[in-house]
Image 1 (cartoon, helix red, strand yellow):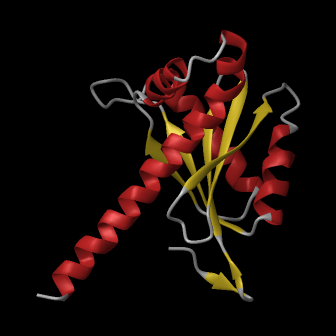
Image 2 (cartoon, one colour):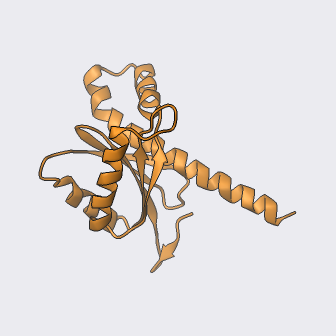
Length: 157
């Protein structure tokens, strides 16, 4: 759950690192619900790193969860290696822990939601990355909650 530092609830930032865009999502103060935040354009100058740092600082983010694309057999391919490299660079810019989360089929899930919402191709494109980030973060938050419930059950035995 979110911890308190100087009376301010801390949050978790979710990242979907795509080829052209980076989807961002933010947890609520209780770290129970993920909400779509924004999409940042990737560029050669990596100015997006500064944008993410500003978001982390302004929102008192305590952790970043970045989607790690894996092959269906669980191995890490070229895209996954790229995300791991970006994670190292980002770790030098922001001073919060960064963890990966298996993002297999996340974009497929997001696309299905958007198709069911009957959005135009353009609108889907604009929303897809931040929705994918939201799904990655929500899956992570759900795993934390489940883990805490299991620990609670064990300690009550």
